[in-house]
Image (cartoon, rainbow, N blue to C red; front, side, top):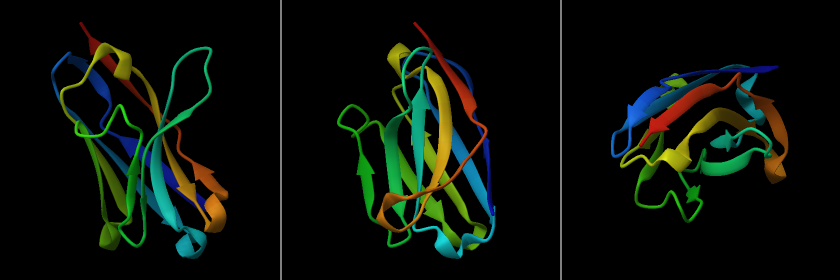
Length: 117
């Protein structure tokens, strides 16, 4: 099994920055990518950014240029640096571990990000 522990959420004013961290542990041999998804009440989780073990990254259009995903493979940790935050970035951010073909391996417990206007 894979366990994911997120940290770094909080309350920030619009235009501010936050850095989220997600540390993976357990049987990581099946994990090929770590990503961040955001969920707001009444909506499904949506992809924010993902990084593959190869280093390839993908972002949704709205986050490009403001968010940066990176990884420290030695620490099994992925980071999401969020700059120039907007109120619409508010939500619970979940770390997701994916396997071959994008298969779900594990979700983290989520961390709340609130951006005030």
